[in-house]
Image (cartoon, rainbow, N blue to C red):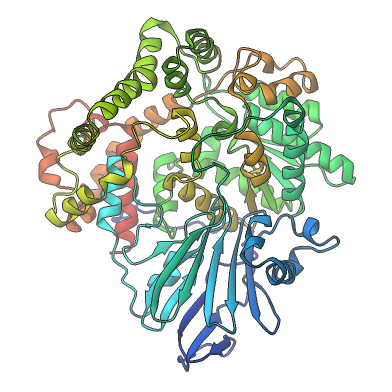
Length: 627
């Protein structure tokens, strides 16, 4: 590892077929143009420039009123215009917008961003897909407003600061998370998911959320029996849309989510008489996290070719943590997935085999697992029997063991929320103030020693104080959060960057909009109909893949592996770094304050746990690379 804590970047075997280096500028007319290939449109003193398109995935269409630019994957383009493909995505989107105006945005599916230039108004709409799968960012530069899928492209422009956002990084360290629009760069912001942003040359952006499956009052109408039976067909359609992108591979774990995607992908390939998907399986060390038997069995029963790579081989001699920090330092945003170096080995094998799409089972937990906060709703209305059934389901599916574990779960997800709701009803102002004060007290003393950073955090803490009496109940509050949480948006962007660096798209069928609109309305009783989690998946898979034990399979966690790796690999890396000095220089941490905890038995304990230690090392190496 170098002095900055970053290993030299290792080029991938198959370079990406598209790049993220393009930028769009909205500013005063007669902007200077360095690239002769830049395309330009103007209206009444305002100009739109599109630069860096060569080698990108941009598709552009225009008529006498609109210019429409598409980036990413419009996965239902063939449904909107039979016979059309991705090459015609901009033309299809233009015709839809011309016919339906902004209402057209809700009809688009996939990992996409649209830029819509209104010629007769001189305004640019930047429209991000409903989930936030496709990255899109903006900043104010000297030339005007700039938009790009890469924060690094934006900070390279005149007038855009390269400074890290000390407030946002401090919030990440605390586990509070920054605002969804914030990035690790102070002057670069993201367009939130499901949002249309309108830009004009000299006016602040205007934002409008164009899609939200949850009603304002929180009252969700549950599916009836006939609608529930549409679930499998909707999942298959989501997989079919994704597979239009090209020959596919699947990150196949031993979990129900990725296996369900593999089953649907196999069916689609056979239906089309197309190349079968390639199963990519990472084999964790022996123990609770090892799923090799199920991984191999599922691929065999489905007739899939499989790349099965042992964890240690995938990580290599440098170790997982060193590999993750090396990758993260070169990314446009800090890379939060510690496991990425291991999955990189799988992705390279898929790329060498000519695959152009990586499918995952991400999203299954968010939409098909019952949040334990349902306990608060059940006990709040006196449904003790329902609460008992939920606890039994957690015991079978999530390894909830012993009276103490059940008691802790009950208190954290039912007792505390119900007590908070009661106190909020009795004295709302006093209780809100106390909740705010308690949350601020959880911030470690060594985080944000800079008074200005700490003051900004204090002012922004209101965002993370959830309503004590949420409309629609606690269960719906947790489901809604999945569509609005900055960690989800960051994770989705990260998967696209991972895919791009390996010449592939990464798509997640469980995050398909139509599937979400269906899944979030499934009655909780249906999700645990057999006394276990994810009945909607389990009922099909146990019949399709007999002998794998899927009817009894619970959630497998790699938490123990994660903690063990951090405990072994972090100390020498921290020693080589000499401490988080780059973060200290920008006011994110105080090294002198943390030194007072040196008597703690381990580095992990000193920094407040494995998750916080990983975050600290990750941010430190990322900031150092840009110092």
